[in-house]
Image (tube, rainbow, N blue to C red):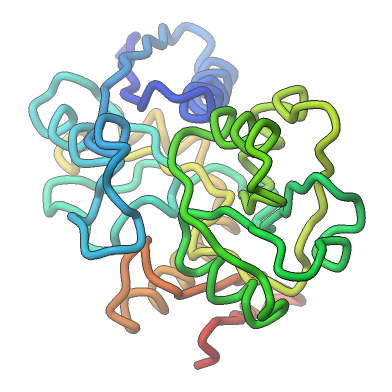
Amino acid sequence: MDRIILGTRGSDLALAQTRIVADKLRAAHAQLKVDVRVIKTTGDKRLDLSLSGSIERGLFIKELQEALTAGEIDAAVHSLKDLPTDQPADLVFGAILERGDSSDVLVSKQPGGLAGLPIEATVATSSPRRQVQILLLREDLRIVEIRGNVPTRLRKLATDRSLDGLLLAKAGLDRLGHQFVPPGLHVAVVEQMLPAPGQGAIAVECRKSDALTAGLLQAINHEVTALCVAAERDFLRAQGGGCHVAIAARAVIEDGRLILRTFPPS
């Protein structure tokens, strides 16, 4: 197999993550040609849908998985935290890349992180998990929902006088490059918050029947990350949750032991 077609969403972050996958594949397989196909998902089209309500699961992945099943692409690149725990029976993870920083960050108009926000400040997030945890740390805050890709959210924070802060995944900012953060905004890690299961990890999905693609992807799989995110997703599955509920987990391997911290505590 000398060519692979990667499917991805068209957002800046999704494309940045797909470039990472493509570069790793080319480094692992010198003669491999990697093509990228952009597929628009329901989550990209329907910005009117709330991510905190009762909505269809897999909002950002359904069309990618359909294209994969139909053979239009060989593999699909996802932010792992977007993937429900119940994968289609004909699809598997061909690779989980080494995870980036799984922390959440507060982007704000004032320096000082969470403690620097004024009393009753307004903070935007589309994540029920982030909303619940941030209110445990600062119950005075006013939380509002926000949609759009990461650069759009950052621009909205910079221009909307009603907003004081915005919660995002640090790995996304790192992969995009902090040049996307408008001048005058400050970025601080919220150490007390636990991330979504799989946050910071890139998953590459392929057809279970496609041994050739699976063989190519295995070369870029990061075993430690794969073990950690599997534990996090097992916790998510046991809680009966999806990617849009207030469940958090972070697994690490220390001295040969896997340690899992969760919210709510297990």
